[in-house]
Length: 308
Image (tube, rainbow, N blue to C red):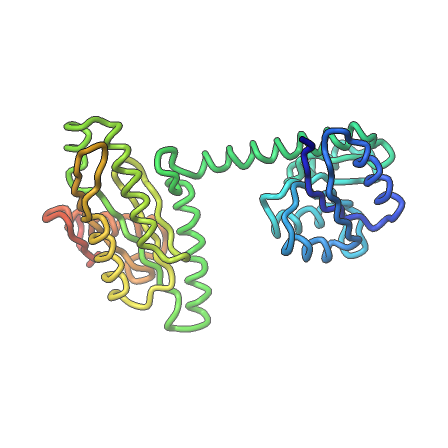
């Protein structure tokens, strides 16, 4: 069965455009569905309406030139495969293009059908591999949740947005950090083994995700510890409602291979800006509040200026 690949060709030269499409038609193993535009702006608009496997991007366009075109495409659609087309055989530029996010670059006048098709196939696979590596670097291998690295980045961005909102309005710009630790999880690992323990953590991760809005984030920090970032919080009551929902969701029985588990958690909450102005202080204060909850279990506490 012949493979079908969707190509967006952003090229303003009609002759170069015809040649590239003719070279693609020579393939005996792949059918290329090519859509061509002659402006970067038109290409970005086309990306909002269609899904493409690869973009062939001329870097000498009427409305954009050089690496600016590539950077604009990358910002607009970071997950798409991009091959840069240039009229100059410049290895230094090729290196700059790959560092800026291109999967390959081709020199006009030196492109054969075999070279073009091979570049497309290899570039798509290279992009898939890059995406997989990025995912592995930013997500927890067990639960698929964001890991500590991605959580830190997400919290930094949430605080930046909150600061901007505070400049616009005194009522906006509140972020809450919840630090959650499962109660007595060590007993599960000791009594039923780590495989069951891992399965339980995956169920907990899925349940936590059901408690969130689209703007919120849940991450696994390691072990049985999770963190949540709640954005656009109006007041502490909103945090309390969210914490109660989390505790209620986790309290429902979990069935794993014929065994019923009942989970509970201890939650500590800190709120920007009153409990900290940066991720480090917010996490530290949420941790202090969480240890207060640990004294009883299945509870939540707000940070209130105390120390451990």
